[in-house]
Image (tube, rainbow, N blue to C red):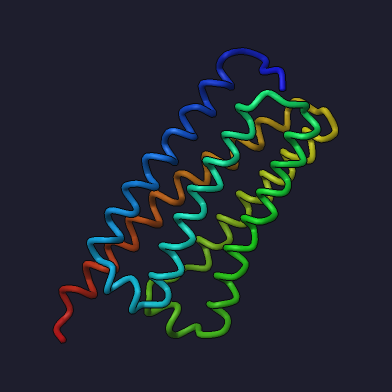
Length: 170
């Protein structure tokens, strides 16, 4: 893909580097509280999803940075975002299946909807790139940025919930 300028390359390098660094930090934080995360199905699902979201950002940035035809890039981005959309949809299913346990574990439908919208933006951006519409890269970048911000906020809420469960009397 021809980047309009060096700025796009830099944006996706920052996004990919940020997601790679956060993957490592997420593993460290999860390993410190592995018992609480494994014993709570909502914390477990959220930690797994956050790791997958960061991996998806990393894969998307690599796809963008690898020189290739715009149509191939778009198709790859559509595929990755379709696969990613499965995660928040599964999370919504868990909520509908066990609403009380979901809410007790700190689950939020708002998070699932935000992640779903982000993946839909990525799908739309990829489809635009398949059609050789350069503005699709804006949607892909917005999708990655939304995912990154939401993962950081979601990870913080997981750690908050784990901290509350650890301090609760047994």
